[in-house]
Image (cartoon, rainbow, N blue to C red; front, side):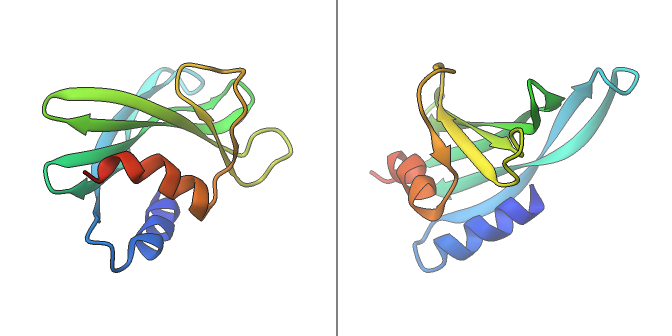
Length: 121
């Protein structure tokens, strides 16, 4: 998540959107159902934010999963899911929220800005 945040910050340089981390508690069933803290990422612009919240590790054929949501005035709207290391793919990939069969693709700078465009008024 730290590397992902560094990449996002480089992409966001000069946009006025700021990134910050926040703690997320995950319960990992593969290691004695222990809870541990991992960083999430929030992008802020005016009174809106897009949250990148870790959902789980080591499940459903991926190393990790992150839910991406737009948060505005008390409302949370799921945008997509990011997947770290799906199968043989060593890079991040994504899919639209709520549709596991809909095509997503590689998580690139273009895909990132498509996800966060709803952050801007």
